[in-house]
Image (cartoon, rainbow over all chains, first blue to last red; front, side, top):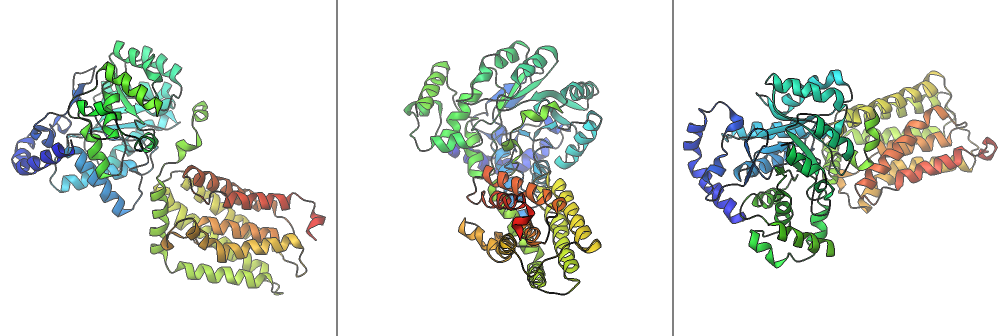
Length: 321
Length: 222
């Protein structure tokens, strides 16, 4: 799978200038087709956002911890390289939050660097509002936009961990109505406040929810996923590897032999394909500061996905280890 | 703010250990040779603790307050806050501690050290020497590189331990100056514990030691 990505990158480099000329005419950068994706022999797997039909690649990029590197120039350049590989492999969704330290600024640094290098990205910019003061929500969003180095609106704004959601959510919905943000959502992680989360999903016109889901943490399958499908809400999945702990515990063990049947060459791809093969899931956002890992992760956005039978076998296999 | 109860300590560890230690590496390189100035300040404090000069308490307090102010501004505010938004609050806390030390020692001249000290005072002096001479090397034992070490007057941990040692060695307990260093010991211990650092026990251990000695009756200090 990495070979496919490398091949795609070579193709992308060769056709970069030609593509840039044609892409430059498209003013709405959020709807640009990723260069590499357009050059891939095999199309990147996408899922439609239920509320609009806009297609998103099933693998995104989180920034929790991994992109919070402060002013360390070497680490920032490394993150920019992660982003370059992410985009080259057809990725679009990048997610961050004001809670994540310098992550937003590092994303902005990366986008700026890639732009200076002539790489036209098609980032789907997803961020959050995370402040207890309702009155300061808009200011925080504007500050986040500046950190991201965005010259346009955010594609998605979410209420982070339901903090002051009663005030922030109406504000975000008003921004959406005014065309100041594309989509609106709410987030939680690691099973936090699911009952209240469901109530908001039932009562509010959300485009997205963001939850924790992985082969071992499957509580959201019971109520949140069915509710998301029923209410036509997109699902973004965070903590797909339990902050890396899941991968670290699994790499000691052999992958199931049938992993090759769904084009997985490593545990990361298998775990990600488990997630994005759930019909309720729009995309997963693994975070990494490693170029090798982002390439592995993006490999899960290509090839075959497991069916329900394989998903069950994977759960049984992992739970037995 | 009922939402805050839903967070766990791990939710506030915003950075990778690699990023944290790299912060020290870059900081040490950027502020060098402040380390030498800080070492000289520490040695001066040590000498002054044995001096009979009437202004020694004022000098010690002024030097120590300057160290806290430097750490507040140069480390917390300018560097640590780039990866941890809570560090701006740490900076305020360290600046307050600097003001408290200045108030106690310089303005009110209440920081005094008897020549005939008891066992607890000797423990305090030992803690100060540990912070000045040994604690910087502790990082090496736990896998840090030379460039990532922490120093008195430059980074928080040895500055906090030295201050607690000095407060323990003083004639009387200055309770008002204890909460911020003790709180830092707790925060530092939790941070390092969340990063699975082997030296996470050092500062909480120091805090426990200080609490053990300070809660004893003052008669026991003589």
